[in-house]
Length: 208
Ligand code: PRP
Ligand code: URA
Image (cartoon, rainbow, N blue to C red; front, side):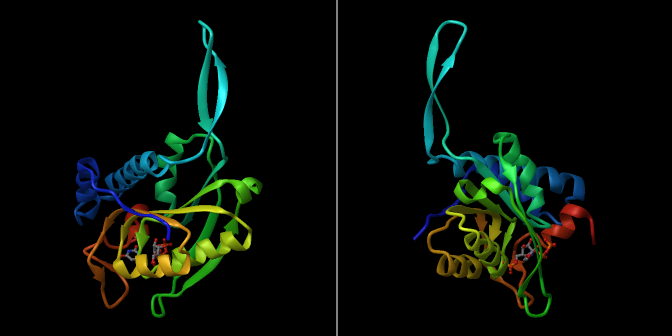
């Protein structure tokens, strides 16, 4: 079974309190989602493989290490887009693939409307990013899409998860590590995370 990591850090708690607050407006919401994603990237990458390189300094040769694999960030549209810039700031060489999914409001089933990936994705270290892990349907579908393309190294990075979504994702993709800023109490009757932060896409893009 892959790792399940729930971040427990004072800065993360502080930033979560801002995005959970219903009074936080679009601009601050977007900025703090991005900051959380950046902080998470530092920890998510901790065990990544490195390779040795020699770097010429002004004084001699330094034995250095760099990331061994290409990195591809795959946001699940729309809300996953809010996490890309923060991670890209820490890993500027990362490429970005996109999976477009929306949840049917009644069935909660994900519907795919877009998929586009960089050619290097098969052997890359891939981070599927989406702020909300509710039923898990969207994350499972996005990872299915990647596995059908023979992508091998996949981790899921989300902000807020529900226990139902974590169980479903672990069952469907037991090899995938899951990183969440917070694990909440439950889903409500319409598939929203409680207490959660509401509709993340709408809050990021001001669509409600
Ligand atoms: C939200 C969210 C996730 C999904 C999570 O997207 O951003 O992608 O729901 O729910 P699930 O775990 O039950 O699948 P939504 O479908 O609302 O689309 P949007 O990002 O375009 O708003
Ligand atoms: N999608 C969201 O944006 N929020 C939830 O709580 C669940 C799914």
